[in-house]
Image (cartoon, rainbow, N blue to C red; front, side, top):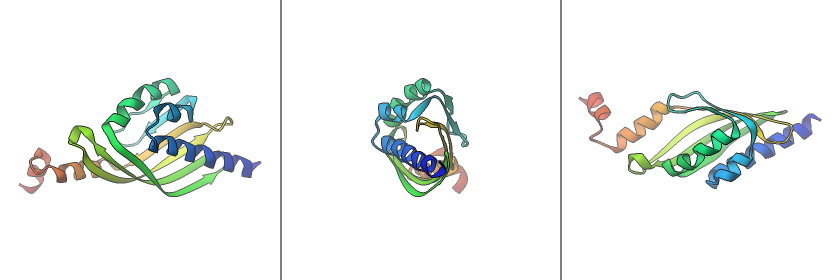
Length: 147
């Protein structure tokens, strides 16, 4: 049974990541459970509970994070749980489409229906700020650091 569970978990996680990389909000929402928990550990992230609330945020998320792409570094699966190390790249629209690359880790729990029930996202928001500030020589944070 454990092998079947691990296989189902791997498929669910990769399907979810594929939908994110396709920028397909409906497909992403279809990958998660009705009571999905989306948890962020970074100050810039905002968690949400429930598929419908998550779906409502996805269009704006994809609009702000142009060219969003998660590259898998490593995927570890244990039963209904998985950890996925990734490299995320995007162009932040509100910052003039500045390109950003950051590494992070997702933790997942997949339910019996093969949907992601819980996702915890770990990434360094300070690194995102550093890259954005480096791209803008007039940014106030840059002047304070070099001043």
